[in-house]
Length: 189
Image (tube, rainbow, N blue to C red; front, side, top):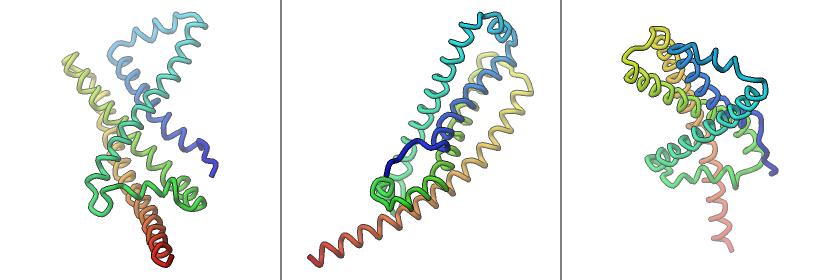
């Protein structure tokens, strides 16, 4: 299968990075609005350069968030009851192409987006607390916004957990059937 980056895959990496940077910029703007005025005084070329670097920073943040998710995946699989080796991931390499495409389109892209956004929300929450300790006080609006974002993060966490459970069930069932089929073919020859 010629597997290319699909829009939902790109979005699941870029949006969490953009959310993280936008949230940090909003927090900094709330604390000190004057830095926006200084940015507004820059030349058009400098602003374009900052925008390009901003996009690269969004991509970098998204990829770092995704790498954290990958590390958490390994830990989660090692603590699994039925599949400590994580063989269900083999479905992404050895599974039926049509089923894989359906799995990626209907489950995996949303799972990665939810998981990455939960990690970004966690990072923003930590940043809010670090800024609070540095400045000793934060406006009420930041605390209310953080609470709303954390509640959203909890909803996304449970959605990601359910999506992962469904992906694992579908992929594990398919890989288990493939292993049984290979064992049966090996026993008959």
